[in-house]
Length: 106
Image (cartoon, rainbow, N blue to C red):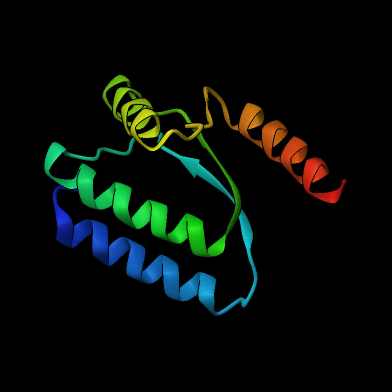
């Protein structure tokens, strides 16, 4: 559960350090199963997500959000004019990443 800025920042700080230590870019697979992002945390979640994606991602696919999260992700993607890259299952997410990898190689 991400209930505000502090929990979001703590999570992304650890994630950023781990990713930066690899000195490379990654495809991100984000599993929203049993994840709760409270309304007070969404703004910071979006900022930190955008920042980490911009710096370290070759592509991101999200899967299994609850209805509230799905609506928020779609709303924020529309505001940013970006693709929310939402799918229902882990397998669909992995398939989409495989397709993204193929596109990057071409």
